[in-house]
Length: 169
Image (cartoon, rainbow, N blue to C red; front, top):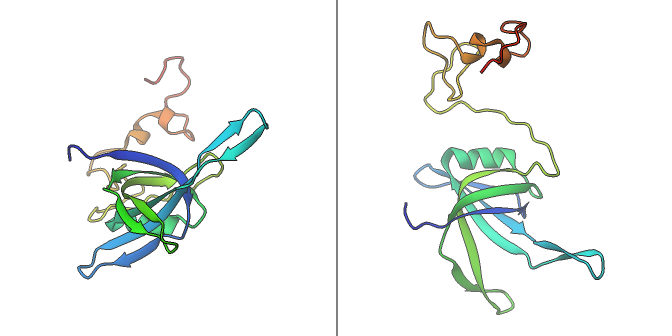
C-alpha cells in the first residue's frame, strides 16, 4: 500500500514469541525486539551503550507459526515490516511514553554471531511427490526434470558436465 513506512530493525528478542489463535482461527504471534546502539568512545577506548529502542512486533498466519517454532528469547534477529502509528501510554511510574509497533513482513536470525539451520516447509495446498521438489514446494510436472538434474555444475556430487574448460553459464 502506498505511503506505508517500511523499516528494518536489528536487535534481540526480549521474550519468547507468544503464539495465539483468534476466534476466527487465525494465528498471530507477538514479540518484543530490543535494539541498543553502541558507539566507540575514543577518549576512553570503550564501547558506550545508547538508549534501548523497544519495538513490539506482530505476525500472522503461517509466518506466525514459523516464528514461534524457530525463535526464542535472546536470539539476535533482523526484522523488516510496516511501521504502525505510535500509541501513547503512561508507565507504571507515571512517565509519558510511546510504543513503536511493527507488522512483520520478514524476520530471521542474524548470522553475525550465530549459525542457523533452515528447514523448508511445504506450502499449503502444494502437492509434493518425488524426491526433488521445486523452490515453491511442488514437484516438477510429469516428463519434466529439475534444473539440478540437467546440469552437472549444479549437482556437486556428479561428474556430468565436468571435464571441459567451458564455463557452465
